[in-house]
Image 1: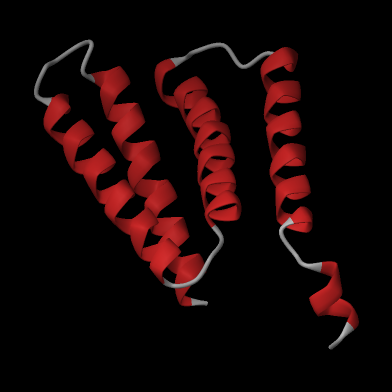
Image 2: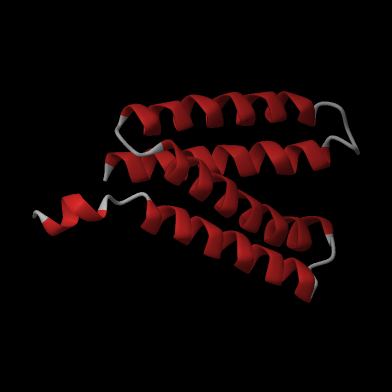
Length: 113
């Protein structure tokens, strides 16, 4: 449970940093939150890996979820486009992460359990 909480916090920090990067186009002070968000995100992601989550799974979920949440939030907050190709791309990213997750389990270990 701890590693999933850390991963959720890493995703939230990364999304905050990315949205702040977009906001910094209007005012430079947002860059402070960009740095805080990205540094926090990588520290938390490292903690997820130390907690035992495989790097492919952690990075895949972090990247895919961050991309999806950022696209939706940017559409709501900044009025950016959210078209069907964007939605389809997000679906493909999520499918790819699921394949990585399922492929990360050793079949031999599951059979011997």
